[in-house]
Image (cartoon, rainbow over all chains, first blue to last red; front, side, top):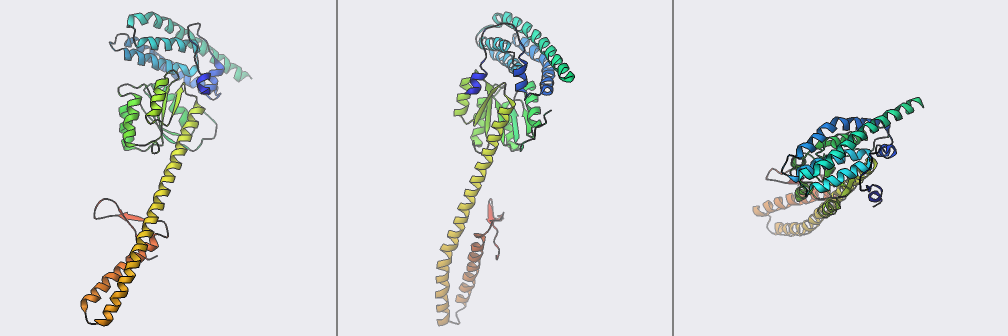
Length: 134
Length: 223
């Protein structure tokens, strides 16, 4: 179970962070692949956010669980560990808690998500520039 | 996207409702030489598996409608772990799904976010195991069939030779009896078939459709 130990996410909340080494490793050290996947994620991101927000109007808890789970799963390809942990906590709570109780946590997660997207984009841009220059 | 040498490609059915994950996974696996078909729910997976043969299924556990575990249970009603390896894909925290899935017919599991190299290694392992298992089953079937043919040949040939011998004695005593001639003709024909069955047991067994119903006949020839 080496994989399980390595990929264990930390709990709690904190600043979103970019772990470029980990993300690159996930994409077989190919910056092009990582960039392409991230661009694709950005394309899908508005729909995934909309699905989560729409799920808050659903009477079914499983709709919220699934929407949050999908977003968390897609995001986890880029290894923002605290953000993934935040969404995991939200997913766990979504099984039993009412939508109103989750909204505040979702709002915070969404704000962190936006920050992460900008950070990741900037990091990729910078890394690409350095790679081209070197 | 990737410059590594593609391995021998496996035909993979990817069952994943998240379109982003499905698209990125499919692209990356296709880049590495695998043939990928994507469906987004359990019902579509079952429908696809009815009409098409796959070497490996990557099955997400959280799906809309029929869950991954339900889909797995449906598939296992008709296809064994040897015929169709299924790798369940789930989040690391979902230990229950991993354990239940493995107990209910999954061959292996991958946790999300799935590392490409790990995913490919597991697909290739399952695909290779499937091929070796099927080859072994076919070899055992061919061996059993060959033994059956040799047994029939041997067990029929001996009493037939005795019957023909006594018939010749009868014929010497009753040279004008037409019935003996007819029996001899029928026994000679049977003897010819037994000889051909003997030839069939010596080489690769060819079959032809059986016009009298379902199933096949062994093709018989003189050598």
